[in-house]
Every structure is written in C-alpha cells, then in structure tokens.
Length: 237
Image (cartoon, rainbow, N blue to C red):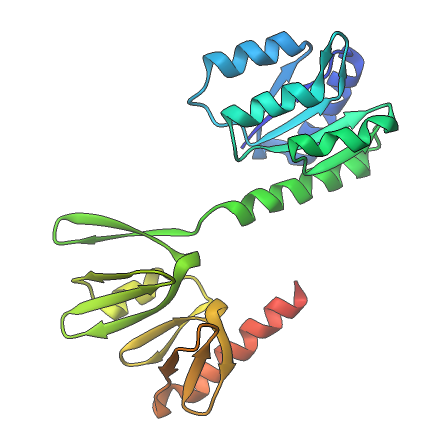
C-alpha cells in the first residue's frame, strides 16, 4: 500500500509520517511532499504507480489542497483522501474531492489512526474479489462479488453471475477448494454464494433475485450450519 502525505509545514509533515510509520509499521510505503508542486510532478511522472491513500493539508500556501486532491484523484480514481486542516471553515468545500476522512489540527494520534484504519477498510471493501480459472488453455477471471452460484452440468461448470453465464470445463470440487468461506456446497451439483441468499428453506435457497437453488437432503444439516455461522459473522460486523 502506498500512502502519500502532503503538507507545506515540515514539522507537521514529519509528525504525520512518524505517526503513520509507528502505527502501520511495514504495511505501507510512505511518500512525503512538502510542496504542492512536488506532488504534482510526482503524479505526472508516475502515472503507472497506483497511490492508495493521500493525506493532504488543505492550506498549502499558494496552493489549494482541495483542488490538488481533485487533480490527484483524476489520475488515481480509486485513491482515498484524508484531508487535514487547521481551519474548520474549509469543511464545506472538501466534499468536491470525495474525501474518506477529515481531521482538524492539531492532529491527535488516535484520530489519525482511526482515519487510517477506516480508510484501509474502505480500500479493502472496494477491491473486487477475483479468482482465476485455467480451462482449455485459457484463463478466465471471475469476480466473486457478481457470482450468484455455480452449477455442474456434465463435464462443465456454469458460473451464474448477476448479468451473465460463463461455461468452463472444470470440476466443481476443484473450484470449491479455492472459494472463500461464504460459498457453500449445498448440493452435488451446486455451490451458492451466501451473500446472494435471502432465505434458507427446508430443501432450497431462495436468492434475492427470486431464483431457487436446491439443497440435497444429505447436505442440508451442514449447509444450514454454514449459513447460520455466516449470518453470525455478518451480525458481529
């Protein structure tokens, strides 16, 4: 993870960076900029390097941190922005840059750590869950967030997504091994994404889109246990 910090006050800049290094340890690569132009030059020269988080002061002397943040976001659309300022009256303008967090100076360590943790969580939530399947010499990437269920038919599997179907020569038991825990094998021929399940019935799952997926009698108890554990984890979060 790459975190850029931009503040024209060297003392504040070093303090922010020290707090980030102290709390994130080896989780990130830190980039320090004490002028707006230094950050601008960097993004122009490093467009292929993705920035994950920008921590930026709104008042950068002759430059406006909000405008600069919008420019950075135009280069790195997925970047998360944490604004810092000593002037609370700037707050109403920051939303133009779609910030994740806003911190008022003087910076308190717990506030910065909280902002970073929430921002990192937001990044992780935004990342698509992808698995890659090699079949017949071709590699297919599957976005698990779009996957409703997988069906086995003859020698193929049919991957049912929200708006599409993908057919591959692959074994259901093999793809089962690489799926995360919110996927359950409820039938000899079906694996279901529990994120897409609305109801658990006696012999089937009802999905949010109205489809019904069978649950075999031999797998019902284990499937029910998996679904209850899944719901428990969701409630804990």
